[in-house]
Image (cartoon, rainbow over all chains, first blue to last red; front, side, top):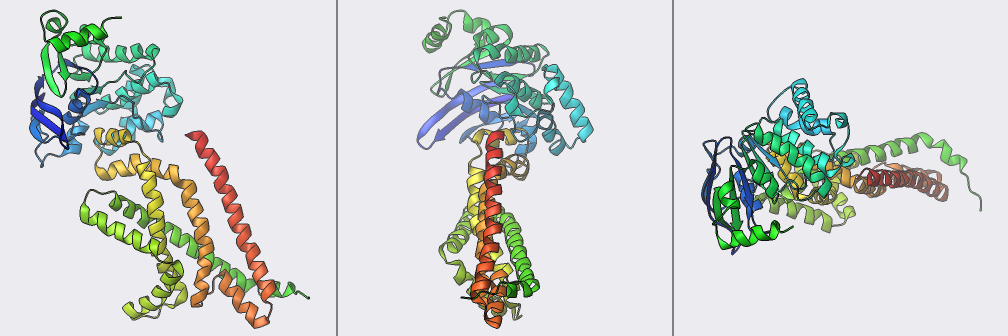
Length: 242
Length: 219
């Protein structure tokens, strides 16, 4: 589904990604973790070309991101993305947030878009909030709407970029619940997250990044068991301490 | 000292005509200015170098010359280039539209730049093209952020339209000055139009203030 091949990226002289190679197969849930500044967010953003890269290539469902002839908007419309800060459109109601891209990008009618959007809103448990504006919802609620908004496009894969790290602790679970459910339904997912409980529960594989390099890329059993690289051990011992 | 304000009322029709012209000039320059200004702002923020430079040059040029000079310029230039005597009133429409676009551009550019990067990324992530992202995500938010500034600029524009008097156009001030010298009632005339300019501008600026408070609440 997603094949990342030798991707390298520089900001000026500073290399943020070094020769990253990995794969996400259909139906897999791949969790990407690592210390801050390790390039994990940058890596996930390269998958739908929100971050350009200078070397290597990424193939999403057979389509090359590096190929200048690729229709990027079209490709992105098939890849769902959920951001750390939700990024709902604040000037639109929840309903319109759910419907606008379905109508303008996929060409669905208003009725189809509303039908689909409201069903998904119901699924994330927020049907009562359809007429509200994003600013009137809590962070956890906004993030669930953001997931519904991405799902409304019928994506072939979902990308999550630290979906819970901007949330108050009490709201983390409501978002993780939706993600777990999604994973159990067989959605292909790539998640940058520090939620190791989530990784333990649903991940097919865990990728550990450090200083722009993929240091570990293995099954979750392997990752949470022994043996593994020193950096990953340090990282795990730090975040699993409490 | 004897003032004859009744004489002002005698020429109310003519003043009204001038006032209407001032308003229509303001409205036209605002609409065109915002429209063209938006395109200029997008060009200024574009990664396409020549487009960027062209827009910057345009904006810097018009923001660096006095409006009065530009009014003269176009009054003389337009008939020279087109070969048609368009008259002071029509040439002023062109002048103000072109001149104000430079100012509106800077306001709208600030509005676009006030939109967080995450919003832009989210729009693209939904599959929007550049144009769609501008139309549905960035510009609506950008305009909402700068509505008070746009209206303030419009108030300034309304006052500045009085400058067309120097090329003999019959705007509010132009009409007043013509009546003033015909009937020899300069004090009455100039006081009267000052009051009109004040009422319109002051009312509008109070509205802007209230709007500003309202927008701040929404945000």
